[in-house]
Length: 386
Image (tube, rainbow, N blue to C red):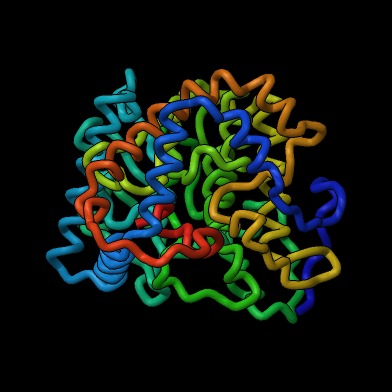
């Protein structure tokens, strides 16, 4: 497969990085009660057959929802937004006429709550088409509600927005990269809560890195379109992972950040939300972050300027969350020295919430345990996603 040349502003060629930071990070977290309890509960949870059945059932329902389940999911997302608002005021603005960008709107719960909270707000949004595996949008939009405009497309293919304009005609998806940005203006609130759907069928060349491509795409678009002083809501996973820590440190350099993990829903899994307020998108730090994210999107999409699959290994986190291709010159010890104390304050409630939920989970009380075995690699999905 022919690939475009790496744009000069992205720096050197793509490289495959492996994550060998876990021992250092775990040593730093040692002695933190919430972290230690969570690690113990995760280990115990792997031994429970009931846990496998619980999460398998939830995934099956999510992948093939009927109308009742779809509307229940909408109500759940509204409830999460309300809980988030109570904890962080993420949806509160002093201005009445605000503009919102929802980069993965379906089913529409966050947007519905935002409009309920801000009666004069308007929303520009994106959603993966149904025929590509996208979910239904269950709130009025378009002709039924002109305050909510939706473009149905895969946002990871908006190449020109990511600094790549010349796609070789021989590329298997060359035509799909040509969609231009459909909206004008900037936004007070950007919602980046999309995650890769198991029902989304993608070309083999990008399948392994699609979660990484999706989050990077949301972050790039959000930072490029947000107003100075605006807010971003970003869905992330596994707060203790190295690439997540890097991302949080980066956002803390150009915004005021807090973390939020719902108690009522998704508490048993590792997902949480970054709420970034007073974002300064024109700062040197944000500009540098956008450049690194664009390079990461390019490398995840095209592998390298010489070509290749760019396949990520399990040691490289399976590309689940945004990746900045390294904070140049910053190793683990430097990041922890500069950001460690703030990170621990941010992460502690996230760990504690998941630990409490696992401790109380009905399936954790089962007496019948699985045979001991490998609890790494692909199996980690149990506590990462619902």
